[in-house]
Amino acid sequence: MEEVPHDCPGADSAQAGRGASCQGCPNQRLCASGAGATPDPAIEEIKEKMKTVKHKILVLSGKGGVGKSTFSAHLAHGLAEDENTQIALLDIDICGPSIPKIMGLEGEQVHQSGSGWSPVYMEDNLGVMSVGFLLSSPDDAVIWRGPKKNGMIKQFLRDVDWGEVDYLIVDTPPGTSDEHLSVVQYLAAAHIDGAVIITTPQEVSLQDVRKEINFCRKVKLPIIGVVENMSGFICPKCKKESQIFPPTTGGAELMCKDLEVPLLGRVPLDPVIGKNCDKGQSFLIDAPDSPATLAYRSIIQKIQEFCSLHQSEEENLISS
Image (cartoon, rainbow, N blue to C red; front, side):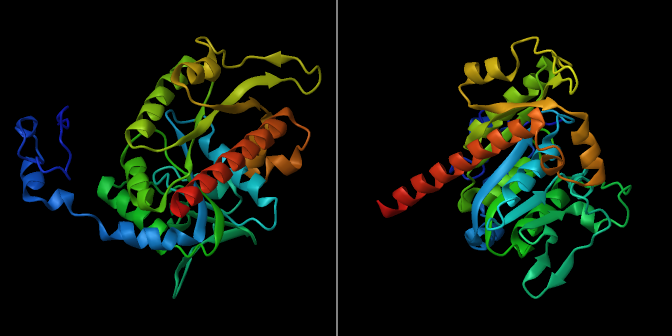
């Protein structure tokens, strides 16, 4: 696989395609022509579209299977409990769209109007969009290369008629690839509040989360904090806690301390979460007294506080 040169000056640099480090790069001719530096007109269109969206939150994970989509769904459920708050949940996991299932919206279809694509509404104040709504069957495989994925994300951000929204939650695929670069690039001018990064306690997950944190810093994406999911199991009968995924290297707490990022909280395992996701129901409503529900609510409150502070800082910058 051909790698980008370590000292790449970047496509928007005056040295693009001309520097010593550009020699041998497969994109040298493209960069030298200046085509790579041409801004995508969609960025301005998306910025205009996002003026009606107050807060934008990305949910990331380095590793697959850590409960990122489950967290995204319950963040949306929790925020939408306030009927005066408008929530939008956007699923950009193009190859593995699980949000329609988790939200109980399988089989729903997207409708087009004069103002764009209409989201699928779970509640009056909770709209959802996913590539899963565009498939003829949930078993259909999406076999797309990067450019087609990027085009789909661009359409979701530019062409969906979200209306006035308080929180846009973007559920991303695992890793740090095309989809992540695209959504950060397209939303950069519209100002992303930050990213919530999901992990589990064991080192095999933390290893990839460190990469995710590094990615956020490289693309200047603020980190709201880390959530340690599947953090122990509390027996509903004896109330004793067991470590199903032992934090052999100190878990998310030590990692956050070392990397100086906030730990938003730990969500313990609860079998009811999985059952509710399969049924497309909110775990927060079905199990209000579960330790996992209390953890979710505490984390959601911290995210709201971060977004409010971020909004105040932006308003101060504009006024000054």
